[in-house]
Image (tube, rainbow over all chains, first blue to last red; front, side, top):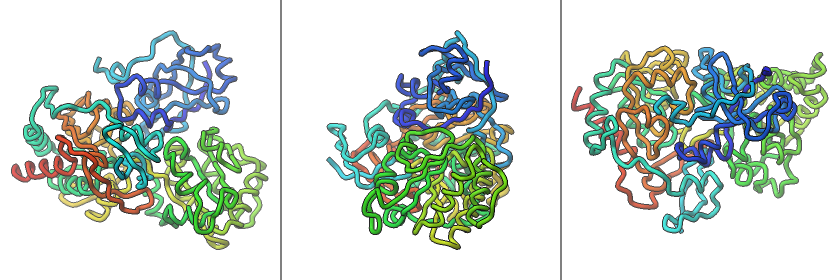
Length: 122
Length: 416
């Protein structure tokens, strides 16, 4: 387990599939997190492995990938997986904290849920 | 091949072409092509999963809205101005709350503008004049793919004849795809935008800063950036959600506007947000000229009140303050924090959208609509506030958003 700062945001694949939410392509575009190579090694991860990301606001299981992010920072594409763990505290602005949420990640054998399972309708 | 205006992102590219028969396009980016391509649609209006007629769905929607004490009418950034206008009138009639996608996107910038104003310019001036462009907390190559080529980094214009005539700076917490097009990439620590902008303000003023680094950036790098900004002939900061969704939010934008004000004592600088959806500007402008506010507007007392801490969609849902929700062309079930989504499961939800999404799964009434820019026409605001008319390329059996909201409004008026 390591402590991380979570940031979320758009990607081109998320944008291309955002109007096809039940497609395999959308699922693949939003169900992962990018991790720094050193952190990836520290967690003993291999390609295709899954991690549990936990913050004060929730937890979610996603696929792990090496990405161009600094050590201690992970990136999750905006969407239903990211929003399981983003901060709902808006500090009175109406804007939730979608970037810079403190959390932790660890390797897990649990499966990645489908978008319908995430919503609790399947 | 028909001339088209793209209805994906805030660029609203008006130079594209698309052939609905061959599904091929010209000059469209990957996002635009995905937008125009045929995909799975909501087949029919539905009430609790059962297929019904448009008229039945409209009546049911009116019934829910009229019976609710405080309905939330949310979304509006992916539809045309004409539909938004009916939406504002509808919200007022039912004594509800109007909020739009900005409240989870660029609305902190609106709060900053209320405080400080915005020294802005059109995309045309950026293209023709800007010799220094800073992309701060935004990633145009993935979110607005044609922005660099049409208006900014690679665009040629009146005073800028080639890419060599301008300097591009990218400031971000991670090395995004857009970082590759920068002359200078400055990687900062997450949440330090405010501190770094403050340091730049001091340096632009000619003051020294005591710290050796700010937010992970060495002082020398900041001093170089401050010099580059001061020596520009025409500079632009395009900022994105890296600023509005991280620590500081509206205060980050406010600080950046103050930096621009300082720079304008030396030369000409403007600042502008990289707006996301193709008509998210309209979703703010229409209520602004109808009732005076851009978002988070409550009509429950019979007159409009603005308060993002109370009437933004996320706050309303977290406090369980709305007892029904109408969602116009948006997917809050996928994009809101989970605790806010949970309340959507407890209240009647009406969805108007061309495509099935996660909100469809939580909706009691689903009304499919024609895709604006392909099957329906109307006016939209490009990210810099320029109004463009999006075109209808093909006939469709689906009702337009404008017609759907107008019919709901009429059905509501019959009940009041």
